[in-house]
Amino acid sequence: MSIRAARADDLASLVEIERAAGETFRSLGMDLVADDDPGSVEELTPYADGGRAFVWVDARDRPVGYLILDLVDGAAHVEQVSVHPAHARQGIGRALLERAASWAGARGLPALTLTTYVDVPWNGPYYERLGFRYLAPDEETPGLRALRDHERAAGLDAWPRACMRRSLRRR
Ligand SMILES: CC(C)(COP(=O)(O)OP(=O)(O)OC[C@H]1O[C@@H](n2cnc3c(N)ncnc32)[C@H](O)[C@@H]1OP(=O)(O)O)[C@@H](O)C(=O)NCCC(=O)NCCS
Image 1 (spheres, rainbow, N blue to C red):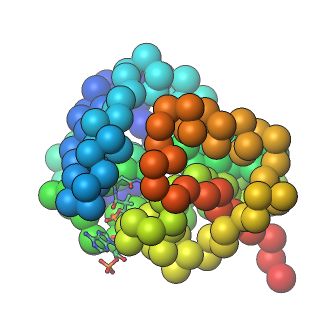
Image 2 (image 1 turned 120 degrees about the vertical axis):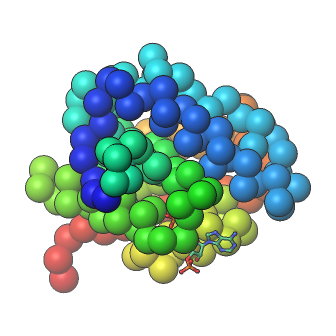
Image 3 (image 1 turned 180 degrees about the vertical axis):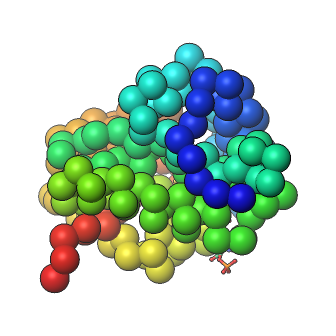
């Protein structure tokens, strides 16, 4: 049980993890989110090829959670972090986010960013506990604004969403 880089032969299982993790939104009446496209092997391939996809694997080396990173305006952007519900609340999400922070820190990047739901307990409030803070709209960089526009166009803003940032600079 550990984190490693995602390989091409993991990617189909990551789509399944995404689909299963999305189901958790149904309990909040957010069926639109649960039904959102879970992505595809083709979409995940550049992340794996670029070393920007990490998986948490079980004792048989099978992924049960994953995180993918983009570079957005000079920060490492958490495009997705998902853990299969059968393995939730064991600190896997936190460990994947710490791995992302190490990856970004090793490259001299100043921050992790993400977009998320403000009122979902395992989204905004969870990330706040992990050191992220909400960005005011005028703090959003052009790349983050473009991502938010895309999300709005996909209908995902039926519930409050926001950008968050975790600084990686030592104080
Ligand atoms: C967000 C996610 C990756 C966290 O993974 P995880 O391995 O369960 O995370 P951790 O074990 O580090 O912490 C989970 C915390 O989330 C919160 N949480 C998770 N599920 C919850 C629920 N059903 N109700 C309330 N809080 C919940 C709790 O604060 C929990 O900590 P606790 O168990 O100590 O109380 C996972 O919940 C997930 O895949 N969710 C669906 C997809 C998603 O929302 N992705 C993020 C998109 S921005």
